[in-house]
Image (cartoon, rainbow, N blue to C red; front, side, top):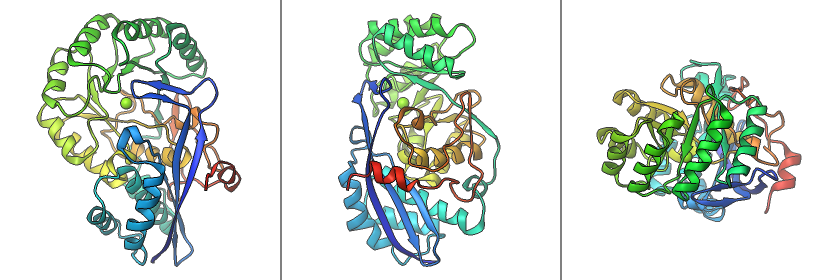
Length: 371
Ligand SMILES: [Mg+2]
């Protein structure tokens, strides 16, 4: 089998009214992503999704399309899409970084491989170790009343874990978390995600003040880079610390482990450059005795499906204890796939069809593509 063409389609899908995002990284009302179709000489077509976010990885919609058109597609056309390791090596030898771009292409290769043998991607990864992936829904960093209203809305949907965005201002962060904690009652676990927004001193203060809120975990309290500082915060923290923005590469995973800087890794294919690269990071977590869960930068249907296959296939992705962020479709006007995924709440179900198990919806694509 040979790759004959790689198509990169820019799309801009708005977030639903009332659900637009506000975090320490800023406000987000629309998602400028790239949908990938990889064509083969045997008629199989693989789907991929690049959830491009300039403030997250430095990639833009335009840079992704240019990287594929000018660098990756010329090197990959003519290659066998089933030779995934060789495909990964080729991409690494042509362009550094660009993890979301590479992940979008690599996920299409897995889709082709699964379709070629009639098996879902999770089966190619060794088979399912769980059928249901427990999820959490996110309360954005709004004022206290707005955050409480959003938490109530999520709880009414049946979710069994809530994540609250923090990292903007310590006092309002603390008030928001306490208010949501109260709405959740004693049985719904609450996590927080500061998206790098606190200093070390602010993180220490806020985590100490929030001891009574019995947080399930605190995600990325401070900016990446200073692993010793993360380790310091972790030693004093009343709750486990999860690394998100500080874990992109395999080396990041290893160094975080060596520095004892995190209890949990937030992982997903886009951040690490693909499904196989995510599996590599899970192996580091396994060696270090750490747990993982699935993070997100709000994927649409194809990207969410890729995450569900990873969540289903690796024992260390402990979504029962630390619910996943496989939730992007809840927040967007469209998911771009024909049959919507079963995302719960409380739990998502991994698609059972061959490959990623999703089909691109041409009508939605036409509506949201921007080229
Ligand atoms: Mg996060």
